[in-house]
Image (tube, rainbow, N blue to C red; front, side):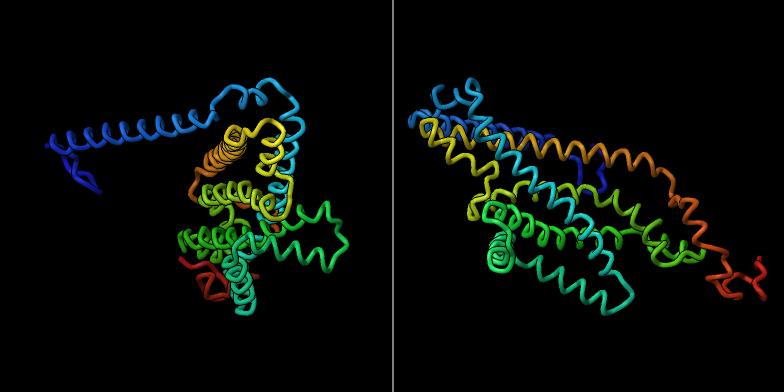
Amino acid sequence: MSPPTVLYDAPGPRAKRRNAVSTVLFLVALAALAWWVAQSLADKNQLEWVKWRPFFTDSRAWETYLLPGLENTVIAASLAMVIALPLGALFGIARLSDHRWVRGTAGTVVEFFRAIPVLILMLFANAAYAQYTAVSSDNRPLYAVVTGLVLYNASVLAEIVRAGILALPQGQGDAAMALGMRRNQVMRYVLLPQAVTAMMPAIVGQLVVIVKDTALGGALLGFSELLASVRPLSANYGANTIASFTVVAVVFVVVNLTLTTFAGRLEGRLRRGKRSTGAVVGAHAVEELGTPGEHLGPDELGGPGGAPGR
């Protein structure tokens, strides 16, 4: 008999047979579902080559509709990422502040914008830009989409940063404080660099959400992003809606997969660069620390008059 693992016992012969039968039944059901979907599309003439041909033989389908939409999606997502990442880190650190008014203010802002759907934030931002600013109607959808994405995702990223820092062992900060580092130096040079590596998967997941949520602007604000290109594309190429949606979905998958791959390599490089158990403090940080006596009293240094104790 196989030895039990930490979480569960190894399956026996009957369990293995049951799992094999369940796997076969699931694959058969999945194949039947795929055949039904394909047959339904074929009955409605959605699989005819004439509906898919523009994406392979006509460059105008890409140059006129898909690529401009992809460009707007990338611009909106990039702006939202560049603004939301540092803003989320700032609010996440502020929520850990020793000052109650800083902690309370940051917590109120984060919880408020995190509780509102991003689509509502975009709609409010669009109305605010139309009412109180001189932003042109052509640029207003982009501004509204970016604003909504930043407000919502910065709040979510703030919680990710806060959770990542709190997940670190408490001894990390205590040891740094014992060396004479100030609290802001502990955060910058010890806690935050270590937390970034642990937070990377959650941060990447939120960045993927940003890319996908740009489609909300095209649905209600008239923002010419990638998904919004399906309507004019289908109207000009013979009602090939299924083909257009499929191609757009593939493009989204490629963009998000590229982002995830890049972030995965960055995470691997960060982990390889931090194989030591402690944080590495640069020379400029050591200069800022000064002597231990500037931050620790005689008793904390170990002996009377600041003499090191044994």
